Length: 229
Length: 209
Ligand SMILES: Nc1ncnc2c1ncn2[C@@H]1O[C@H](COP(=O)(O)OP(=O)(O)OP(=O)(O)O)[C@@H](O)[C@H]1O
Ligand SMILES: [Mg+2]
Image (tube, rainbow over all chains, first blue to last red; front, side, top):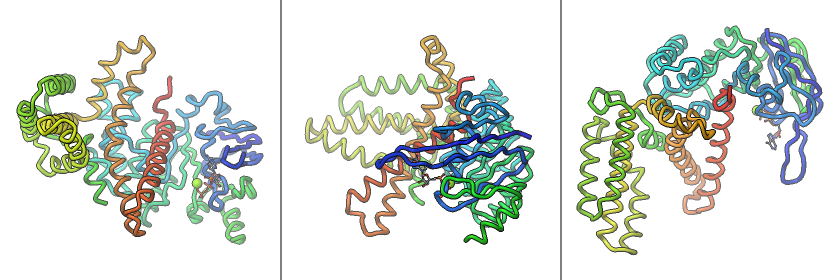
């Protein structure tokens, strides 16, 4: 398993009315296979998740993935860390499903024939063969999220960070994506408001107001959060 | 969401097919588009412009992209064409207006034929190959090719966002208030651009090995 380390991390943002602290002195070492980040809106979950692949940089402290410093070696870390967002529209950048997956494979396969074959194989493994040559605009929300996930997993990361991957999906599709995420061999860091999903993880961190206020086995942290609400 | 459909049809939508246009190598079509563009601009006069437009329409028909896609493309262009035509007619008279509008529509049609008959991946490969010499002066051909694809994609996306913004304004009875249209539109486009940038960064696209 991979090892994600937050070492006394503080994140600040510059706003119109001065600096704002988004995360204050967060420390945690994550080695569990499934880790959930839960907490109210605006508490800092996404900020914490984004630190893992350098989309956000710490003002103080360090973030490491398998001992590699994210700030110093961002490209190296990104090759290990895949990231899915809630809105797949922003993540799909090519016109068709097959081309979008192929884009992830550009560094691995130089010839476009090989790349297309590899992309089709990826699509097949996610049950997306039918939509291979369809415009990504014409896919349903569930298909798009599945495709976004396929595009990220095609790069074979060892960690997957998912920021509310099921928020925009209906019940059936969110179950499906949830099941898929939990079946992956990758280490999973999951930001979610779906407490049932969170409770299935090995560990959960409860974030409130830029701090980790509870950290432990997922079911007990979820119970604790439910009791607060 | 009607904006989505209309936008998706305008540029950047490959439609698989078996016409000769589909089978031509991407480089040949790219060169053809370049020649077509130069000819369209160099030949002057309203009648030649109309002839160039007819040629572009014939290409579009030949590509088998279908009347619906064609009409969607033209509808997306309508506002710009009308504004351009009116301005030219006012400044330089009718012949000039006909010429510039016909040239514009012809060029967009020709570009649409290229993107409708060529998978973007093939286009990217060709651009990457063509740009290879530029590597010596520090340009990354992969990145330039990707930037082209993002620009092509930005057209339907922006139309989409415009449609959403307009609908939101209509829902609040603000469709006549330019600020209720322009401000959220700019905010949305900027947010979308940022999200796209982050998604690309998260996928490691653009990172140097
Ligand atoms: N670039 C930024 N500049 C200023 N403030 C920011 C920036 N990014 C996030 N914030 C603020 O930081 C706080 C934490 O944001 P974050 O997105 O991490 O919260 P979250 O826990 O993911 O919330 P949600 O559940 O709503 O997604 C929020 O108050 C947000 O408004
Ligand atoms: Mg969030």
